[in-house]
Image (tube, rainbow, N blue to C red):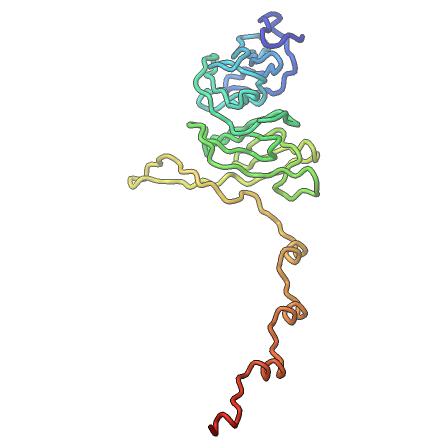
Length: 262
């Protein structure tokens, strides 16, 4: 099936370039029908239930939906690629809010995928062309950090991507990211958060503490030597001002004996 922005409901098993799948706590299946600008919802038995979204850029509309994630509190998060935002719906398909995404400006080498860290209330968003993972608040959508960087030219370091692909988070908060261009999967430590506790001992809102760099940057001995400024003995000798005996004699003011006697 190939239709596009005005795809009809029938056939209910029709797709155009589906990209991602998510499952809710009831076992319902959400499929990003990317080319038809919608998310199709089915029961665990495969019965079509509803479509979420339609083509466009307005509230509740989608343009190239790709990555999907369902939160524990019953919200569907959709990477709305060409609208450069995360569209948030309830599981009945009602639009709730959009979270702007500062990425996806050009034609990416891969579509953006997303993942949720429930314990830290974080949303991880792939930025394929930027070679990084954006970190946004699951509740407010505020961007609170990022990690990774793009490298398509040289042998990559442990925090560099050729092209960011799928993302997953395990029960301990570790993040797994596929590097499509390099043919590998990278594992990152959980994004750091600081737990804040009220005086009575009741937990309160978690304060996010963005790190300078989440993944370890490795600098080799060769790189250090290459970047240090080395001053050789020859350079010191060349730059020092040397005053010879002849120059001293030439510059000293000598008072003749005749003048003294006069």
